[in-house]
Image 1 (cartoon, rainbow, N blue to C red):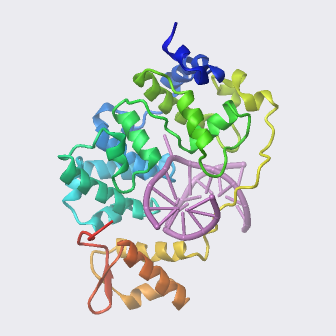
Image 2 (spheres, rainbow, N blue to C red; image 1 turned 90 degrees about the vertical axis):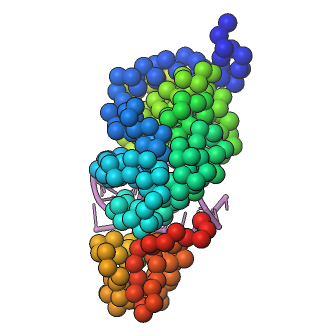
Image 3 (cartoon, rainbow, N blue to C red; image 1 turned 30 degrees about the vertical axis):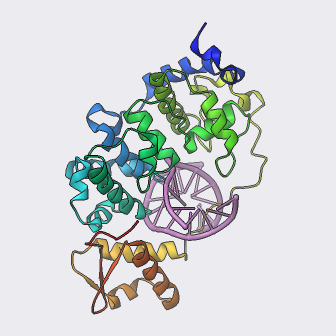
Length: 309
DNA sequence: TATCCGTGGTA
DNA sequence: TTACCAAGGAT
């Protein structure tokens, strides 16, 4: 009698038979990433999770190393102006993540004695930490039992259990229920399962051309058994970028990142020729706390802590 | 819930 | 070259 036999939903998907091959595959093929080393600690895990939100591993690696060398503890980052976080973020994209990571560090220093909290609810309360990141930190750093549902795991589960090429556009209650149902009972095993299924999605069960030949559970994959049918649902619309406010914001922030001096408005005006959109983008950056307007029509990265957010 | 929020590699 | 895709979160 195993512990998993107490959970019928787990056996419904044959999950117990999948745990070992997936975890063993991970033990052999897992990438040696710096945030997976013991010395990374919970703070290293948290930093990596922020940076990896919508950004590929290869682009994160150098920035992560510099970040951890400069700010080895949350309090080190919290002691600096938020603009320094935005500057160090470089070209990772979505720079609001840098601001939120700085805010999370400040909250950790103030509310948690400088230690990344262990409780999922306390993690979730930090700026920039959503359902995924809270579960990832609790699981990877503290080896707790949480369903970790990122884009990789959602795709693996869609194929393995549901026989579909892609998961729904937005995470559904059914996906959360399934992820909880197939989670190993033992926390240490659950944590390994979470990391292993993510890695499987990143390396083997990829979005475009999955390498099923290297998959440890290909023979039990519902999608493969069904003949790997193409995605049937509505096409997931891809985001446009050229000409959007996002592109303008990116150009404006790039100017401010590359100097320590306040920048005159006239200099910022050169990055985009359409004045209405240009002003909207700059106002948006100021509203987001990514840019600080000074008297005299000059701008810089934020030196002072925002009053909220 | 749909949309907004950057950037760059790949087929 | 365009379109897709990459360890999401906030509103």
